[in-house]
Length: 252
Image 1: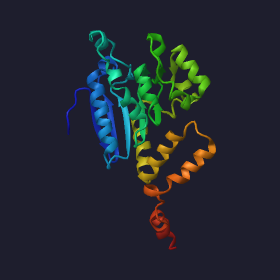
Image 2: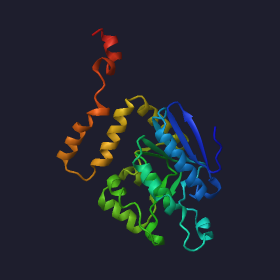
Image 3: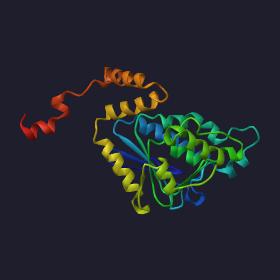
């Protein structure tokens, strides 16, 4: 298996797990971590054996504290930051083919909150918290995605105040899909991935693509796009194949 400096990669059947592995600095997103993460993520997204991707952070304090400020400060004036270099890769995560699940084992601040919000499903625990910090240091981010998760009024609150959102509030507003005990968080995320992997991968990926692409369209357009998607590569699985277990049990 390939060796990495700032991430770890493991598998549980069809579920791949990427761990941000810089716990001493709260898994801050330096250039090495971002390069390793995004390159690996793209490989897994193209891998036919991978049906879902779980992302978590090492240690018990943080998923990720965001950009590595010390590294940014060392860069010469005018040199693009790691975040700038990986701007399009962040879009790639949010619009990947494979379903993504975040096991958010601690704080997700700044760029860590942006990454966490790009996952399809987020599992948290009592240690989980979020801060969308961009406006506090002269930036803008998350305006294109966060309103779809928590709604426009709440997104305005979180993005314009840059305040801390604790685990209970995050669960209440939909920023966390599930809230579990800290020791169960990774197992819960992998379990979701395994449940996804049991389904027809073509249709899982088609459903995700439709949900992503149809945001902002009319309900009728969305309806028509769904029916159009069931053509070509997404032609429905034949009944005798799709319901083979049922047919065998019932003797149809």
